[in-house]
Every structure is written in C-alpha cells, then in structure tokens.
Amino acid sequence: MFDWNSKRRGDEEVRLRRYLLGELDDQTMDQVEIRLLRDESYADLLVTTEDNLIDDYVFEGLSESELESFRSKFLVNDERRNKIMIARAMEVYVDERSGHQPEPEPVTLSQRWHNSLRFLQHHKLTVAFSVLIIVLLAIFVPLLLRSLARDGGMSPLQARRADIERRIAELNRQNTDARQLVQVFLQPLVLREGNEIRKLVITSETEPVNINLQLPPGNRYEKYRAVMQTVEGTELFAIADLKAGEGVGSSIVAFKLAADVLPQGDYQIKLLADSSENVTSEVARYNLRVIH
Amino acid sequence: MVPTKEQFDELLKWLDSDRDHAARRYEEIRRNLIRVFLTRGCTDVEELADDTINRVTQKMPGLGVSYVGPPESYFHGVAKNVIREHLRKRGRNNPPPLETPSRQELEIFLQCLDECLAKLPRKSSQLILQYYEAERRAKIDLHKKLSSMLGVRQTALRARVHRVRAKLRDCILDCLPRKIGSNDTLFADI
Picture 1 (tube, rainbow over the protein chains, first blue to last red):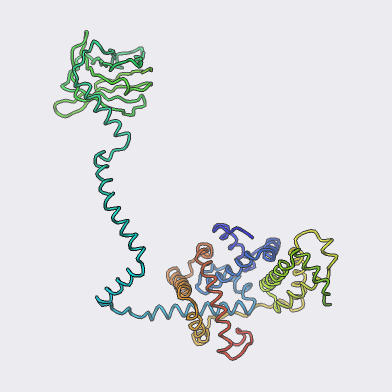
Picture 2 (picture 1 turned 120 degrees about the vertical axis):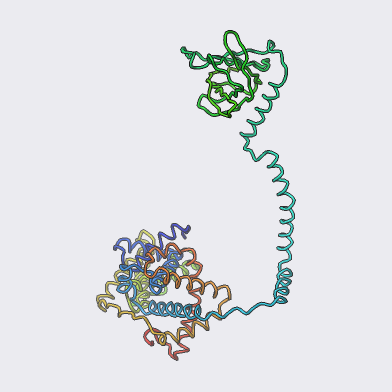
C-alpha cells in the first residue's frame, strides 16, 4: 500500500490520466499496469482519475490534445460511455436545478424566536462554553490592554533604553562630589589625528564615571545632548539637557554614567547641540573603549 | 484447456501462503486485469481476464518454483500476449464518435438520478450537487480555458466526491434497466 500525500497523489493522478488517454510510452505503461495489479489503492486512484477525466470532458476542462486523445483512445468501451451519459445528466440536473431554486419562505419574528430557542436547547454545551470564553475575554483583555498602556507599548529594547536614560538622568540630578568619581576626558575625533582610542577600565568597585567631552574651539550652545552608540552607529541611549562648562584650557560638556550601563566594547559618543531655534546640529564625536 | 483443482491451489499458494489473503489477491488481480483490458481497448474483458488467469494457472506447479519475481509481473506479461492476440483477431476498431445527447435522450438518466439522489444521505447528496455546481460554474466562468491540471488542483475535493459519485452511479445503473425494461448494455439501448 502507498502512503498518499496530496502532492504525490497529484503526480500519480497526472500519470494515470495520461495512461487513460494512451499518452504514455510502452515502458511506463507496463509499469503502471503492473502496479495496478499489485496495489489496490493505486487501482482505486485509477477509477477516481477516470471519473475526473469524464467530468473534465463533460464540463469542457480538457485541453485540445487531451480532447483528441479522449475521443480516440478513452471512449473505447460502453462502460465509459455510460459514465459520460451519467455525468451529462448530472450537468443538466444542476443546470436546471440552479435555474429553479425555490424562493426561501419569509421567516416571521416568532419563527426566529422559536428557532433561536431550539438552537439553544440543542447546543447547550457549545453555548455555555462560548459564554465562558466571552466572560474570560471581557475580564482579561482590558487587563492586558492596561498593562500594555503602562509599558507604553514599548518593545523590550525600547523599555531597557528608557530605563537606562531614567537612571542616568537621576544620577546627573544628584550632587555628587566629582572628585570621588572616575574621570574620563575625551577629545573630539577631528582633533585626534593619532586615532588613539581612550580606554575606560571598569572594575567591580567602579562607582559612576564622569565623562568629560572636550568641545571644539569656539563652540558654545545653550544645551547639548550626548548620544551613546555602538561604533556601527546603533543608538543605545542618550543624555539630554547637558550644559557646557569650563575645563582646563577648553570648554567641556560633562555627565555622569552608571558603570553598569556600559558592557565591554567600543563605543562612540555623538554630541549634539540644541539651539534656541529648535535646530539640532552635530558638534563632535568621541570614541571610548570600555574594558571590564 | 481448463486448469486442474491442484493447479489452482498451487496458484493460490504462489500468491500468498495464507489462503484467505491469496483469494483476495486473486480477486484483485482479476478485477484489475479487467481494467487493463478496458483501457487497452479490448471487448469481452471478463473472458480475457479469465483466459489470462487460466494460462498462468496451467503453468503450475512448475511456475511457482522456477519464476523469480512478483506474480503480478508474470500475470501482466501473459495479459499483454492475450491483448495482442485479441486485437489481432478482432482488429482495431475506432470508437464511434460520441455526440452530445439531447435533453430527451437524457430524460431516463435524469429520472434515475433524481430517484438515486433522494436515496443518498442528505450530506452526500449536497456534496455531490455542490461539486457539480462548482464544475458547472467553472465551465461558465472559464469556458474551455481550464487547464489539464484541473484534476490535480481539485484532487482533495474530488477524492471526497469520488465515493459518493460511485454509489450514485451504481444506483443509476441499477435503476436504468428497470426504466428501460431491458438488461442489455445500457449505451447500446439508448
């Protein structure tokens, strides 16, 4: 017996169709016939294929070449001719039937009411189950929506970024003695011809670090924003509302970072300036390598 | 020459060591030989199937010992000889063209169809009517444009329809002689 999956069945039906139409070469024809003798399910498929072929003939679904083979090779016995007559009768029957469909009788309101009652009586379990599902949905969908609204519908990555930015903003609001912090001084990339990358070693004892970004000469804006990103340019988080201050020999923009927000790797800080006209412009970029 | 009972027993043993299974195999082979003869354009197909089986049986018991391979292949080889002889004797006849029958010619089929559809379970009759309704629509919509792949695309549906259609056809074939008042070959009567 053969395990008929639909694709294989389809392929076999095509082969049997060609067999019935006398379109196979002698060798393939022999293979088909030996299999017919050996496998009853294959013989059943032959009968189905024969019926389908007849339907296609009656309902004009044969190609020109198939039609020619059908007339010359397939119509070789009375049994098949009888089958065709029955299929023709079927065609006429559905044709006439579709032309004489009885108009559905109008249903009165009381009939509708009785039909509904009868439906409920016959489908008690189904109705009870459906009601239960509706009640559960009514309870849980609002809860789910509320929970989504709380998260602002954010993706996990967005939520993590928001959390980091909230912590950094909090850290920068605190008045910590800057002298107790690890100080990192970074120069703008344009000024660092040697391309030496500044390293920050973070240990388990490292407290928040103070990042000092040296501003290019003559650069002074009201507010700055530092965007921490990977060297490939993927933004990780941003620190907003930064102000420029005076450093040793040049202006700097400083901000504090929690040590745990920077896993080991290379980073780039993009410093943006927000002017009073709401125009944002890039001020400089700084490279930083974090080693744990 | 008719084979002996011993030869027939040997044939069954050759088909299967279990006698019941062997008897079933015998029936299947005979039925499918008839299909092969029909497809090859033979007439008197039952006689040809019996002739084939007799020829194989007469080779017993020696065949069971000497022949290596599935019995069906041997039956097929003999059947091909039978077909060749049959067609040589009878000559190859081109089948008469099949004209589209008129409504009047189909009347008796329609009466039987109506009767037999009523005998089917409601679900089955609905399935077959819906199937033919879809075929009719396809004919109207596409009109001769359906590819030869139609059979493949609709395989799943057609397989479900097949059993109901076979039952319906058997019923119609039973009904027709009663309506016509003859047991002769139906097509010849119409």
